[in-house]
Image (cartoon, rainbow, N blue to C red; front, top):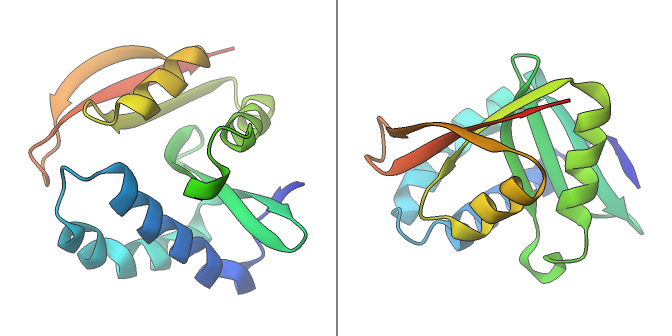
Length: 141
């Protein structure tokens, strides 16, 4: 079931955020994610966060900021390829006529996922903090 984040569950969300960032981005130092943890935890309540929960376990979430920007989509590794990410993304497509995001070019699984869901690369750029190449992608209704 997909619901909006109950702020009392922010610890569960942050656990997924740190684990899955480290898993998906082996080309970026773990310290980068650990350094940004407090910032993200503080910013999350200001985002629109949809949570995929089953039997009281949060299996994934998606965060939207600035009315259409996907700040992150995360699914616990053991639940990858079960449609959870697709369900979360489809929920957002019901709410927003345009969605944008940035994704690291080396995160091939994520780039492929977003392309499969109709996103197109608008721009290639270097991330200011990590110096890694990333794609700015967009989806329109």
